[in-house]
Length: 190
Ligand code: AMP
Image 1 (spheres, rainbow, N blue to C red):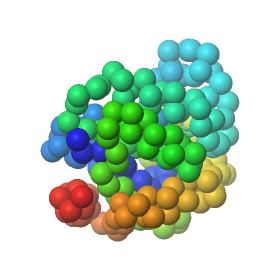
Image 2: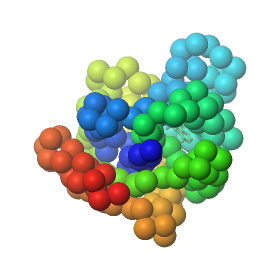
Image 3: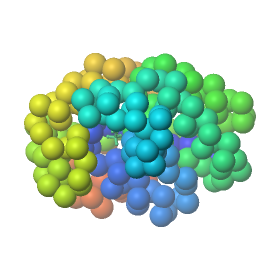
């Protein structure tokens, strides 16, 4: 299996690049943000609880997203691999993911990180907010809060996979095709 973590702050281009990776490698896309948004749309209790935190730009509890990932791994057993987008976002989530994959005799193949500076992220997210309809893309204070959450809680996830020799960083600014080329090179090396 090819199990890829597409890593990077909000607005780094993970969603855009995920679509291209999936088309090429036939992986199952697991975006915890998308899964949470569909819980919200479905009006589930989990969705209602998550919404309060998401609307403040805060992370939802580890056990919530780990449980969702656990279900999806079971559902797609035997697929060619997974692309994890927006997950893991804490070291505890990384440890849980490694343990879950190990129960299937699997592991993360590579983490590809899209590197984009904070000013560019803010500009991109404000722009995306004009059309995305996402409440958390609508104002500067909320976007800054999400970037802050990323810098304080999520960045250590990169060190965690770097220690396993699985971390590859790619410049996330520039042409979409060029960035995708960098990602495919990283995947081929994995
Ligand atoms: P995203 O679509 O990845 O930008 O996620 C939107 C929001 O969903 C985040 O700001 C968090 O509130 C929540 N979220 C998504 N994925 C996770 C995760 N792995 N851990 C905790 N919270 C998450």
